[in-house]
Amino acid sequence: MKIDEILVGITDGSYIKDLQTSSTWKAVGCEQCNNIGYKGRIGVFEAIRSDESLEELLKTNPSEREIRKATKSQNILSMAEDGVIKVLKGMTSYEELERVVELE
Image (cartoon, rainbow, N blue to C red):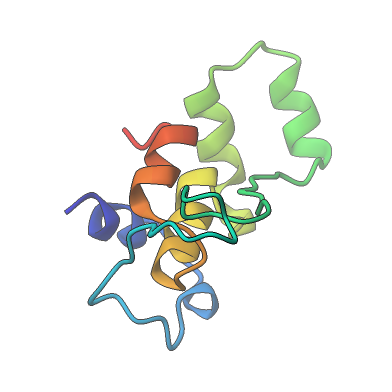
């Protein structure tokens, strides 16, 4: 399953400690959410810290893959990883995550 593949990439166990991985939820509509299954918004985030080594790398016009490799030691979640955690916490559905984030 794609969720398992994404979870394997999370190297900092504190992000997934005590996270249930056995089920996901589907959006079910009601009168309060106008039958769409969602009310309000929640962000899916990704960030990197800029440091001297990253600044030097950026001078070489690196690919996204090279930037990810150089910043992997920062243990910051990718958008897919952050989204999967939110799916497993029941904050959104896998289908909604798949709609807004490229999971390939």
